[in-house]
Image (tube, rainbow, N blue to C red; front, side, top):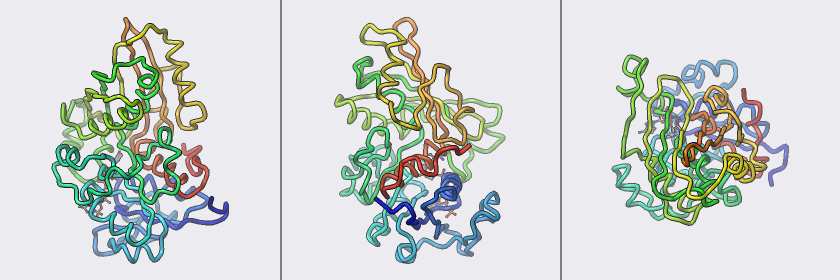
Length: 345
Ligand SMILES: NC(=O)c1ccc[n+]([C@@H]2O[C@H](COP(=O)([O-])OP(=O)(O)OC[C@H]3O[C@@H](n4cnc5c(N)ncnc54)[C@H](OP(=O)(O)O)[C@@H]3O)[C@@H](O)[C@H]2O)c1
C-alpha cells in the first residue's frame, strides 16, 4: 500500500488524443499523482495546452518524443493512449525500463495471438506476453489487478456489454450462444485521428451500423464472458455510429432460458454489483446523458414476452477508457479504487 501522501509520477504516452485529454483531467484531480511527461510524434515539443486548449493554466508541460529510458527516468507509471500496433511496439520497451503500464489499446486484451491476427490484421509482435496479462475490468478482475506491471484496459463497447451481460449469464438466465448486442457509440469512440467516416458532414444527421460481423470487440466480449461464466460464449454484436460527441449505449437481447420475473432479474444485478461504486442498477432506462463525463455505468433490465432486454450505458471516454484506467492505476498502486474518480461531473 502506498503512503497516503506519496505522489506517483505518471507519463501519458500518446498525449494528443481524446482518451489522453480525459485522463489528464482526471489525474489533475488525483491527490496522489503528478503528471511528469506527455508524448507525441510531433518533433517541435508542443505545449500540452497548445494541443488541448482546455488545459491552459492547468498543466504546464511540453510534449516530448517517446524515449522509454527518458520517460522511466522521471515516471513510475505510463498510461499508453496509443492505437493498437503502436502500443505493442512501445510497451515492451517501457516495461523493460521498469515502468508499470496501463495500455488503453487492444494489443494485450486477447489471449490468443492467432485471434489477434485474425481480427486486427497484424501479426502480434509480443505474443509470449499474451495470456499472462490481467484484463482491467475491476468489477470482474479486481483481485488480480494489484501488483501487476501491465494491465490491458478494456474496450468501450466491451465494458458496456460485458457489465450488462455477466450477472445474468453467470446466474444461468441466458444461453451462452446467440446473445444479441446492439451497440451505439458517439463519434469520439473513433479517436481524434481524422477519418473519412467521422467527418462532420459524413456522420452528422445520420445513423448507420458499421463493422457488421467483424467488429474487433467481438472476440474480446466472447473471451471475457467465456472466462467469467466458465462456458464458451458467442455473441452477435452490431455497432452503430451516433452523431453525438460521446456516450455509449448497448441494448442487449436474449431469450430467458428459465422462468423469471423482472424483479428477480433486477435483484440479480443488485446482488452482483453490491459494493461496486461505479455500477448503478437503475429502475429507469439508462441514458448516455446521465453518465456523460462520469465513471458510472448505468444498467437496467426488462422482460418482454420471454425475452430479456438489458440496457447498459456509459461514457466511452471515461468508464469506457480513461476512468477505468484510473481505477486500474489506483488498484495497481495501492490507492483507494475510487480516488480521483468521484464527483467528476
Ligand atoms: N476513443 C475511445 O472512446 C476509446 C475507448 C476505449 C479505448 N480506446 C483506445 O485507446 C487508444 C487511444 O484512443 P484515442 O481515442 O485517444 O485515440 P486518438 O484520439 O486517435 O489518439 C491517438 C494518440 O496516439 C498517437 N498516435 C497515433 N498513431 C500513432 C502511431 N502510429 N505511433 C505512435 N503514436 C501514434 C497520437 O499522437 P500524435 O499523432 O501526436 O503522435 C495520439 O496522441 C486506442 O487504442 C483506442 O482504441 C479509445
